[in-house]
Length: 194
Image (cartoon, rainbow, N blue to C red):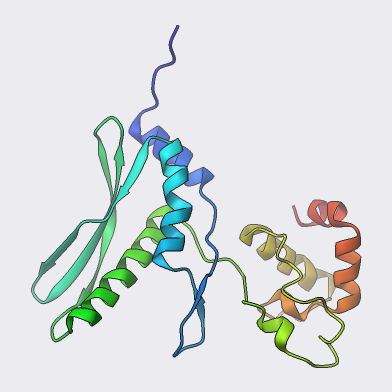
């Protein structure tokens, strides 16, 4: 007997549980912080949404000097599930500024609607710092093999073990000998952080 197709809500739940976090592929030239571009977010979302019979639609609207991005999930059944909207004041913006504003709103709205965050990638910043504590560490972030959720758990574990101070907000501060210990026994490390 053929399987009944999932409802739009059931497929949305499946999608939200299956979607992963996104890679921070850009650096803000002014603030120097890392972020995920709109294309990176869409490249992450679209294939997973398709598996669950969903498409993401971000229509625009404007009123009272505000520009607004709506985020909706459209199901193959034809049902649309609204996931909210974000708005910014658009008065006085040039066409280029408005384009940047819309891209920003789409990025933030998609991340919020999908419950995703940006990973812990530091674009090699830790590898480029040379100090006695970091000189013996391998190039690139040592924790690149971890998902964002695993990295958060690893951070909590390293704090609990006393390998990094509670005030540290990065895994880059883990001492080289502890990194070697982790890399030498990743299976045990994964078990410890779960």
